[in-house]
Image 1 (tube, helix red, strand yellow):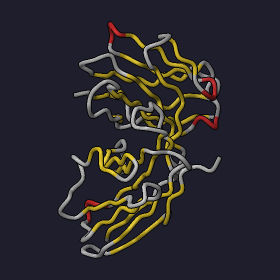
Image 2 (tube, one colour):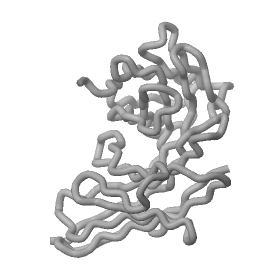
Image 3 (cartoon, one colour):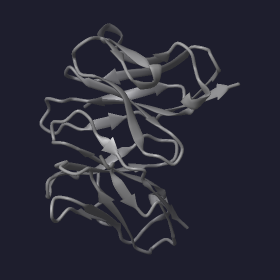
Image 4 (cartoon, each protein chain N blue to C red):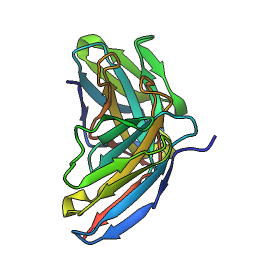
Amino acid sequence: AQSVTQLGSHVSVSEGALVLLRCNYSSSVPPYLFWYVQYPNQGLQLLLKYTSAATLVKGINGFEAEFKKSETSFHLTKPSAHMSDAAEYFCAVSEPYSSASKIIFGSGTRLSIRP
Amino acid sequence: EAGVAQSPRYKIIEKRQSVAFWCNPISGHATLYWYQQILGQGPKLLIQFQNNGVVDDSQLPKDRFSAERLKGVDSTLKIQPAKLEDSAVYLCASSSDRSSDEQFFGPGTRLTVL
């Protein structure tokens, strides 16, 4: 069964600094991987997704993530943090070719931005 | 294009009471999901519908939770009777079909059980 582990429940960076949110996955087959963002009192919004094409995936709002099979990682980065990036971020995995494909979410990382 | 609609946005009830949530997915989306998100955790799938049929309800506590999507469009999730541990945000999502890799989420219903 697939799973994801997000390292660090809370990350705080200064405005303009690099954002790095860590995600490691476990899957018995080539996975699909996702990053979602959740702003307060809102649903989840897809930031980006990896579906076995290019290993470096670019998403919305300047975020990108790199799929590293050897490290079973899919870390999310942004070169320069903005105050509006403050939110909860969820890494997720699915096994698209299994008979009961579903998305499994990590426990989330809350990103805070310091002025 | 209108997004996934959910109501109510907030609900406070006492334990052992009943509660129902409503979801209207994006028009034309065949697959509908209900998730439970407990504070500090990621969303957990409760039930997945393909049109009006259930695809996966393996994590739905069937002794107290029920869900239906009778006409293959909107859906209701019911809890009867509620327990304190049911306090959570209930998220509805939809996708164009079962094999779609992208789900669109509604704003959720925040349930507090006292």
